[in-house]
Length: 310
Ligand SMILES: [Zn+2]
Image (tube, rainbow, N blue to C red; front, side, top):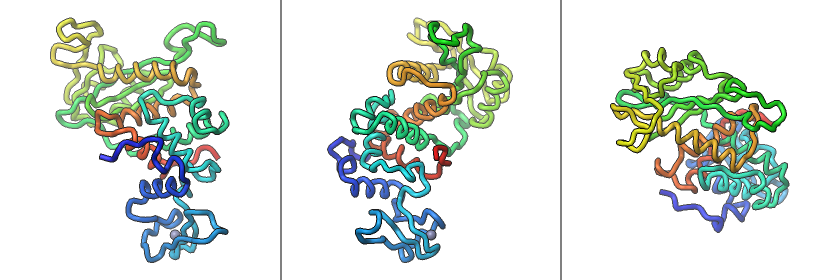
């Protein structure tokens, strides 16, 4: 296991070390041309000299030049890589995220820059590789929750769940999570999420909501838990051991953190925040990741993402 990162580590202070650390993360076997994919070390040369940007490479295959950030979500950012490392580190220290205000204060960047960095990092933390969850003998917990439109004093407040945003989450109790913002949680939207993300050979655990009844029959088994306190277990657990505790804990952490750290998130951005919480959950200490590894993984995700903020 990688040793825990601390703010004394060189990539937080020295731009060259920061770049080398990023290169090591993205190119463990040496540089890969950002334009043509060439990775032959004989055909890639470091461009030296004061008149060039540091970290510049020349590809003899396509005659192009590139750096480690070309074609990533960090491309064209004037922000030093040391600050990207710091922001990613702050983002991944606990499980609650970090406010733009704290990034702004700690990194000495403007609030606007902090906000921009956070959205880029959320983009990086968006997990695009989606192998099916669960499988034979595995359990998937599914549940939905409602978020937002809670302040009765806010302009436009409307009573009722249908005016809130719906979130559907799938969780392997001892493994990964996947979380979706949907316009409305219906049997159809929930089914679509389940069958496109989970092996139908899995066992499905949900509450007694009628959203899951029909799709539940497509799975190897479907067990429901009644929402009520079981004093024998000290938690919400059904007679056959079924529970939706893991997914409820995820929602609990998400809502508490949103309230405490982020205060407000518009519907437009909700999926980005969900991606952020999903990323931390999927790289949590319980799965063997420490803060330093989580930070490095977050930055590794700058590759292969569509640039949505140009
Ligand atoms: Zn090339």
